[in-house]
Amino acid sequence: MLPFTVDFRPGDPVYEQVMFAVKKAVATGHLAVGGRFPSVRLLSQGLRINPNTAHKVVAALTAEGVLTVHPGIGTVVAPPPAGAAEDRTALLDDELERLVVEARRLGVDEDKVIAAVRKHWRKFPQKS
Image 1 (cartoon, rainbow, N blue to C red):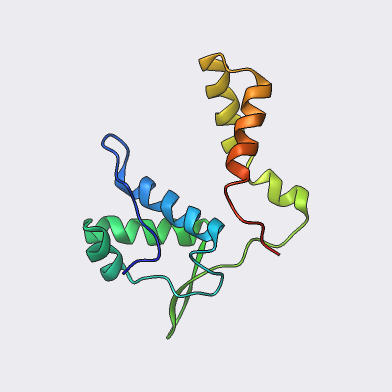
Image 2: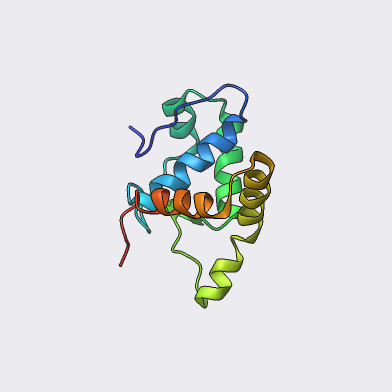
């Protein structure tokens, strides 16, 4: 049994949907820092996805620093990046720019975007 679920949507790449589900599970605490992450084989079988896709997910999450590989132990959830809050916030610049561009394209004003971000922010428990 996997510690997260994926509701697959047609049209979106499977590996991106799985990556988002893993990041969400980390943010909500369903996957704890230092906790073991399922093997490529278990991920593939549990989600009924191609093993190559499962490997791509693990490799991409490792490259992004969400997961880390420990020889002899396996893949585990990595701690958040160290550094000042400003440095960690800078890691979100691309995603924030995409959000602003899409909101402007749709004609959504700044206050509504901020309210939507707050709504989603509150869905996740605060970590100490």
